[in-house]
Length: 34
Image (cartoon, rainbow, N blue to C red; front, side, top):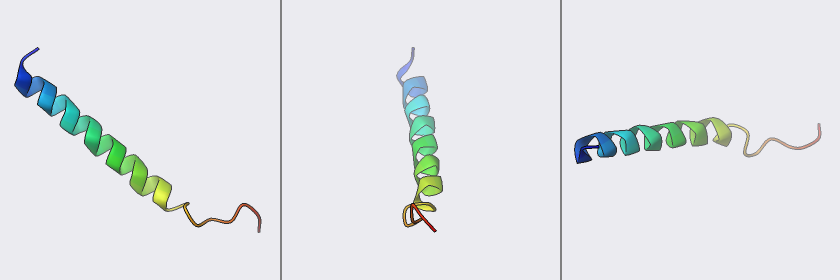
């Protein structure tokens, strides 16, 4: 696999991880009880 494709795949993976972190941050301070 050419290096360019590997870098592109890593970049896509990083974007996915960052997007997941943003979603999870919305619930960081949600209490376990209400």
